[in-house]
Image (cartoon, rainbow, N blue to C red; front, side):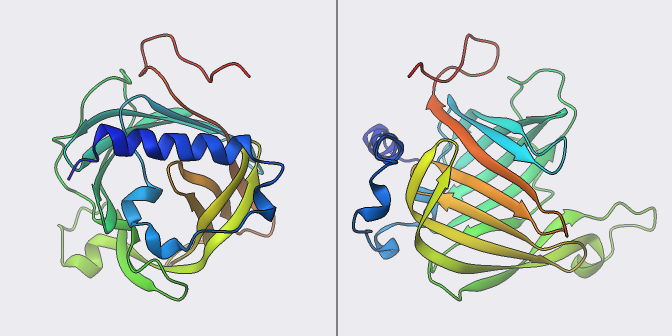
Length: 233
């Protein structure tokens, strides 16, 4: 179900207060993560914008904009070299990546009705340390036909390793952060950090020399094709 306008603004206000209180947040008591649901950690109302600083790779710095939403389905455009549309189902207890459309010519294009080629569960309840789940990730491209699920997808295990954490990024200090370890069957492990009302605030690919992306700005503004930018201090 789509979050009400008041709920969205409440989340945005909470995020703004978190950033504004960067100098004192670490000393404030932390609200239990159990009061929050999975959807609180993945806001995606049209006009939301995120920018990330990056280290270790030329594509580690990027920007994301929520461009379309209809009910629980939302589209976020990711720009880092290529322009890619990610389509998610955002349910109260679960966030699932359903489709991806790459090499967009127009950032405002609507891909909400793209076929559900993927079923990658990004975050789900219970939001508790030790909770984990198996999920398919990317579709294997093969000339041999689709095969069964194990043949079609690369799989991964996602495990919640921290709740109620405090984390500092270039955008400020965030509380009630959830830390998720991603363990792919093929490839390198990574860590993802999510803050309520803001979403992904940091990711780390755990190579010998880690590739890190960290939130540098988050604001509610216009969608691509219109004047946009983080609010002035």
